[in-house]
Image (cartoon, rainbow, N blue to C red; front, side):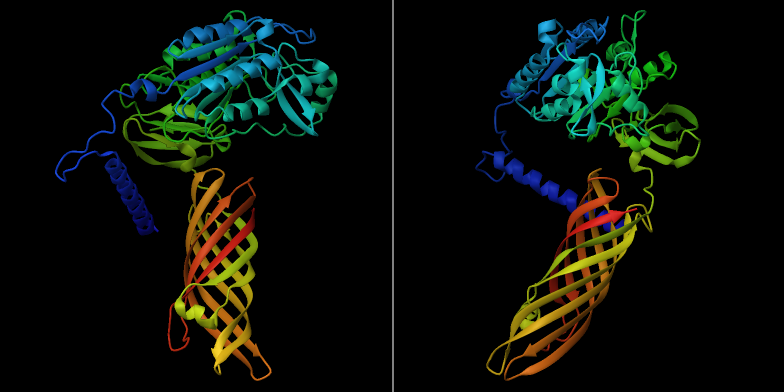
Length: 547
């Protein structure tokens, strides 16, 4: 398996290198084989055009038309203070007056913000400090932000749904977006709702479905977990979480690279909010950061910072991180560690060790901790529709027609190693074709069954998708039946088979998989004097259930 992984990495690196050379050659204006490559444009001529910009939309709502929503003291000043803290941004829009903080006005400001975004590399920060509430729409509980014109008895129609806000942010055209909600999700403090809703929530055995990150471009930061209070504090003069978020702009450079990112600021504020409220308020983060966090709130990276280990995966909630025997923090979040080899330990809240081992990181390198935690073995049952396609000349000469069929498979995910897949698959096909004989083309019907033992390894580009290359070995049974007025015969074939293939799966939830797979099979049998391997292509779409 190690050799396969090494070969795969070598092929990928070589391919990327070739693409880089081709790209450089496309920009060259040279006519001599020995001259240096010329740039596509003069140095610095595109700096002002290509430089990514940073935009912020900050909303703070103190007063509400529906007086059943009590006034807030510090929401507007929170937004004003954050506007001053984001002084390095190219454009900061502050909404705080009653006419600016209605639902239509906020959505219009968001649309205007989107018109300013010109590049996926632009940074967009959207911050709202207001009441948070829940309402039922379409039979499902949803989270809503209370705008200046929201009515308590018509929250679903007049409030700003968090899902709607997230979808609008997703369409802004930027891949560097942070949504910060200084509002809680319980019935106290900044979260208010009617008595009827309170009684309904009291009967729930579990919280409504949590807001999921809309896309890889969106980081969602909230001041409190569901069912908790997001507190304002007169001593601080701010919402508690926002106070420490502002403080993080000056003190939150965890890795010392000269820049404070959204994840660094949130982790700084999260720890201090939890301590200040004595555990009553736990800010949350929902993020899928590819590589380094690109959302810079203050400063700019001047050098490679200290290595960082982090996780914002929901499964990491409550895990503690210890480095060389010293407790460094609690997940979700990130921890800066020293470069070089370090002994790392991850424990649950009850003290159970989920990972213990050594990691070696270079300056500036970041490690997503959930990758270290072995996935538990899971039973996998799969069924799908398949198609058998002749791929070699002999197979196409009347021996194997294009044959539809089906496939079933049973196996074990994450066994015999983490990411491994061992399964037993059975496919069946029925087709019809013609074969040369007696000076004419004789029609026949074909039935085929394929039994294989398959071994693969899953790669996870994201939590929602997996790619599983695999090898397999097995046996093929095929029979051809000729029935004409002049000729009748039955032919049978049994051949050993070896194959290479891959699955691509989409994971809509923890148990279900929907995907497609393709396998190139080599059948070893004597067909028309040729011993093989005779190549066949099997294509399939499938649905799988795991437990």
